[in-house]
Image 1 (cartoon, rainbow, N blue to C red):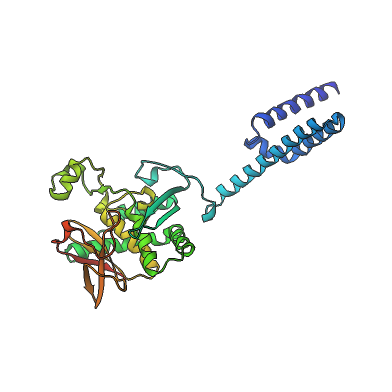
Image 2: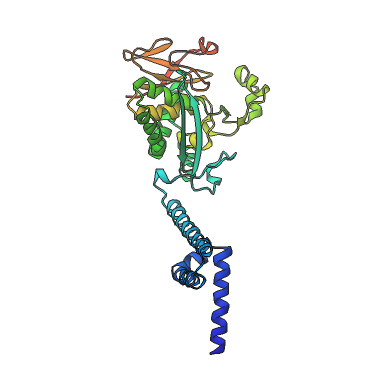
Length: 334
């Protein structure tokens, strides 16, 4: 009998120590439904014996604090386990890795702030799942070469279309975020498009190369000057662009990476959009009522140029360095 009492007392002390020093551990959370009523009973007994107001308050604070800890732990566990709920994502990760497949993070949230050309300020959280970005990366790396007529517009138009179709189902969280912003601020047709494009214009610009960065330095023109200024380069990226899912995971990219993403998002919201390509650049094209400036015509509609790599550009303004380029439409929303 004496040994039973002795071991019971030892077990009690061990459990008490875990409760004090590691209350959020998996071990204690497992036994908490049994041990918590016991400890609360002991605290209640102490309250009756001591019968002192100050002591009552102190013990009650301990109980309340412990209750709050349990609630927080349960809430955190519930949120982490719910992989499909947009509202539950709260973890913010900063990272340098470009390859999503190497990530062990369950989800990544970017805190993003931007201004439009109309000087409207927005702030939002954008969440992406690394496993989905990994799937898109693998798809891009392994997808078959498109059968084209040999022209740049036909080849890349088919590449863009394949990436858009693969990524679109993975962008629902991003789309819902934009949708909520539009509803919150009651943005009209033009303002909503401007808000989305401006958010991408704010994302850091980084050149993506299908070959080595050293080789890209020899291409002359913008490529050479960019590297001479120490611009960041991501080498060995197939097609020289990343998919829309990868883009919002990495939160960096160059002209066609951004344009393909914007085409995907704006097409979902019903905008008439296109992708313009030249030998040196890629731009978004959009048909907007009452817009003016530089445009290309397709089936009787004016599609206005929209620069995506620099802040503050409105639709219809083609950067001076690209005004003499020969532009083609690589892709247009049916």
